[in-house]
Length: 202
Image: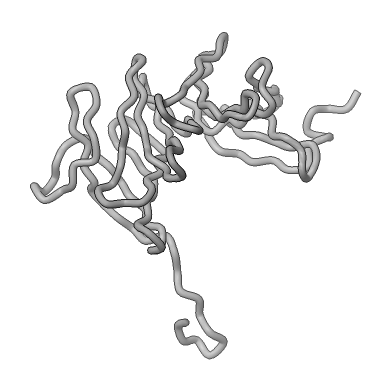
């Protein structure tokens, strides 16, 4: 019998907590994705029952989040080691769960062709959107700090860091959740100009 990793074509590691890593793999160049859990010595498949494909993106302790395809629709999921909880932002055409910290699940969703971040806590969804941005994608969360990216129109993508309390009073309010107000704290551009062969910038 072949070991699970012997039939993998592509492997993507996305999240880690302690000694446990999660991600997804494919068994062909054009085939669906399958989630996995790796504890340092053993791989275990992680797939939502009945799904077309599953991707694990984030982990915190025993809780794992990710995305799965049910029929033609993409949903987020929260797996607690025993059962799967479907995550679907109301009105969204696709929902992705990408990070988790404590009881907060972070992700992003698609609506009318644009993307928005969200925070899920105890059945409640809170949209996270940078003011005037075309799309906001929130990917990682640690305690009360969120990281992601956004862009406006055809402008380059900009990284962002969001915190739940103001540092200077000029910070932009992104959203509210569980009695906290979230603020944009820091931006960092994620693109670099190419260098020409003579060392100049293009």
